[in-house]
Amino acid sequence: MSGHSKWATIKHKKAATDAKRGQLFTKLIKEVTVAARGGGNPETNPRLRVAIERAKESSMPQDNIERAIKKGTGQLEGVSYEDVTLEGYGPGGIAIYIEALTDNKNRTTSEVRTIFAKKGGNMAGAGSVSWMFEKKGYIVVSKKTIDEDKLMGIVLDAGAEDMVTEEENHAVKTEPQDFYKVKKALEDAGIKTESAEITLVPKSTVKVTGGDAKKVLDLVDAIEEHEDVQNVYANFDIPDELLKE
Image (cartoon, rainbow, N blue to C red; front, side, top):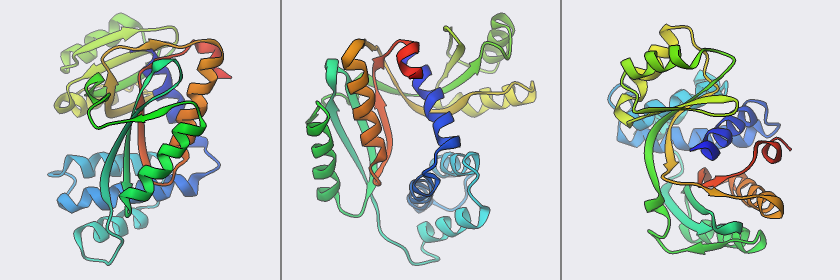
């Protein structure tokens, strides 16, 4: 779990300060559009609710969000995207699971395969690594924000499944259906989170050090940069000092 906590925090900060905000907005708009196919009301469409929250956290204008929803519900014309999942292995034997949205599945698959090959990894067949991850609510709170015992009391009372205290953060895990209840309990208590999302969490992690650690981060970064890739999940655990570099 520790590797996931560090990576979730880094990605959250990176998204907030990324110079490539335009690329981030494109990905978020795509996700809102596809999510809205299941209905334009976020109260009854959990995927849309998550997509809108992510867009708002990244300071996307409300007009952009509303336009994306209308494209998804068919009120406005737009490109037709399909969900694609891709799986593979990286340096050190780490598992990588990718969620993408594309208007051309063959092109996206081919381009991601090329990234794996160039960066020392390899694509694998469907089901090769997906079983290593489980869908969970995942909330990261800095240790500087609140005492461990106090936080544990709040999140467990709200329905959290587990909480682990690490070097710099507390990592709270929930079942997906309990995520918003726990998140709201933290908001009501005035507790700031480093990141909060429904995500895929690895069931176990693989320790990666030295040269392999840099190769892993290079590979994951390159995959995330691809315009069709929405989310990348991996089960690496890399020492803090290497991640900070």
